[in-house]
Length: 177
Image 1 (spheres, rainbow, N blue to C red):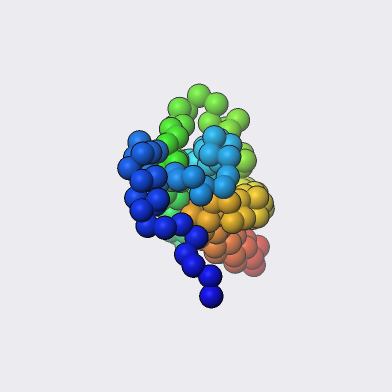
Image 2 (image 1 turned 135 degrees about the vertical axis):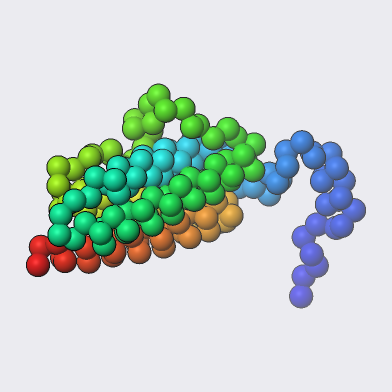
């Protein structure tokens, strides 16, 4: 059995010497600036999805509108929560979350498409969820073990996005029936 990698005295000295770096230690293996940049893209994606879902909540109309509107509102609330989680992680990494509305759709992986009717709204939300799923899977793989905290956060959000896609597929099938 091998000894612990670093003696406690050295750990304590390092912790005191670089307190201003917060949770980012010498063991952090990723390019912090690039991670913050990627997280700001994910933040923009979540904000665009929140805005689209809120519009769809208010604009839902037709025979299945009540069920769809309830789903849109639930998803909007969850997307906003994801945005908060991502922004918090950005600040933990000593970065600045970009909430500037100018360029938000350019930074977002998903598009803001309003949809003309209930079916097209559901389809656009499903497309956006599929984009988020694929990009968040890629982010998680890219991070690997270099930033396990951010990877786990993205995997947790990914699981919810997969639930959203499943919910939307069910809604779409109900709308077509």
